[in-house]
Image (cartoon, rainbow, N blue to C red; front, top):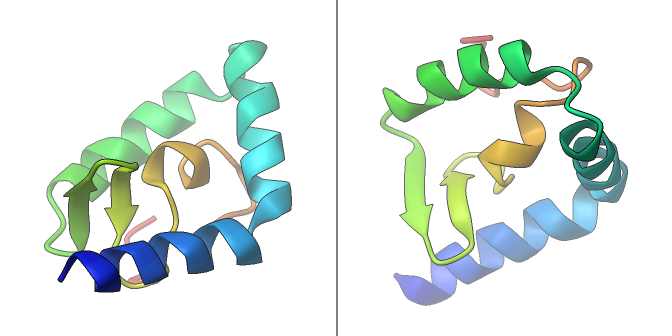
Length: 81
């Protein structure tokens, strides 16, 4: 199970470097906080959210939810936001 989570996390990191950089910038500048809070609220109720040592991950795409939810042009794989 842990190897599966690690593979998903690595996939999310390697396929979304621009999303990660944008989210770090937005977090530092305190931008899109409301968007992130709203989206994270939806993710926290989702069956595909994984709690890991790397943070909360999406089981479908492998993205770190704190990063993905902050970027306006990102979307939920399930169409929830």
